Image (tube, rainbow, N blue to C red; front, top):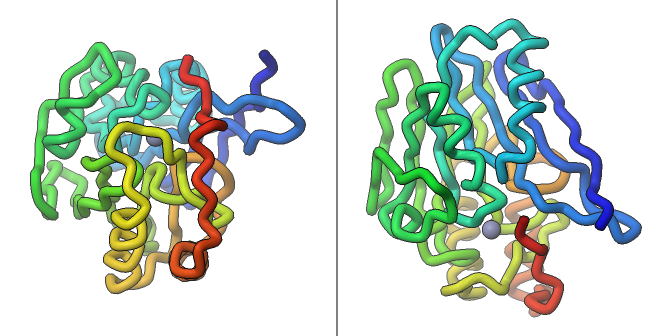
Length: 233
Ligand SMILES: [Zn+2]
């Protein structure tokens, strides 16, 4: 199997993404994006990746001068292995895992969650403040996270939708297209994000992507692609 290349990018002064390029020409994507927020004294991650990207995460921390800081928290959007398999590496650097209660019970990782929420919550994470928003659909326990980074409202949505507005993988236990649509409408009714940061693919914008996905869902243009489920490592 040939895998899509990894990339790392600085999105704003303190916000970074490490992930695999979109699958093309038969290349396989086996890993989620890992987003890092370089705080004053610690680093926050959104999703841990499969673990395969850990060397790239460490390289970014080194390159941008925050390798000495502990990883304080990993906010997990859901428990699939490509998003949660790397939690042990983050925990070995001091991180606490934050997840919804459902995700904590369905965490495909050797680590357990440390901080749980079962409703929309404002999380006070020492130097970081994040809103956890339950956005079920891809899994029943999926959560999105909203943080302000460098003056930008950033919304991390995991596998709720892809960057073309299509569905994230529809083959997971408890998948619900109706819930995806309801979750998208819930997010669209909130203040428009400057960055909408999905679990895979490119970084393409904020509200426009939410509106595109909602119009796809309402017009029946979402094609479930269960049979093309991404292989898990
Ligand atoms: Zn997933």
